Amino acid sequence: MTNRQLAAQQTRKKLVAAARRLIGEKGLTNTSVAEIAKEAGVANGTFYTYFRTKEEIVFELGWESFRNLLDETLQQAGGFPERLVYFMVHFAGQIEASGLKLCQEWVRNNADPALVEPQNRGKLQLDLASLGKLVEDGIHRGELKQDTPADMLARTLADVLYGQMLCWAMAGGAYSYKARTEEFCRFCLPALINPYLVKKKERNN
Image (cartoon, rainbow, N blue to C red):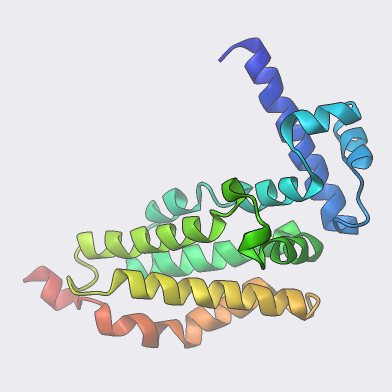
């Protein structure tokens, strides 16, 4: 990578970090491009070198925290249930840590796919694919039965995570999204995945 490419990468990171701070504090409507540029220490025009609109940077913020979550999850100790809980709790925790206002802006800007640029529509597909790969990895390791419906489980788990995220945003952050997900994992998740788990005795045979 050339010095120019490295400098461009750093500038983009500064803009994203500045937007995360400002939008997380004030919301998208009350944050201007000029404020983001000033916070990042760059000229206003520099913003448009990397992002066409304020909304576009919200999509970038939505992607940022989750690109490495699957890889981190697959490296965790324990069996499939422990890895799945890790994924779900960290998914919720990262969104909560990003701030309520940023979550609300992301939900608002993604609610109608017809209004979203094609390159910014992939977050749900990324999460569905990650959950599907997590389930398939459990099958490959012999922790889940071969006939486990990976696609169905992935869709259901995504429905839970996104549904909880929407409820948290609509409740104005009145409770902890992460704690609510931990509660689901403790009391509801076993009933969902236990029918597909391979018992240790069966694995050893």
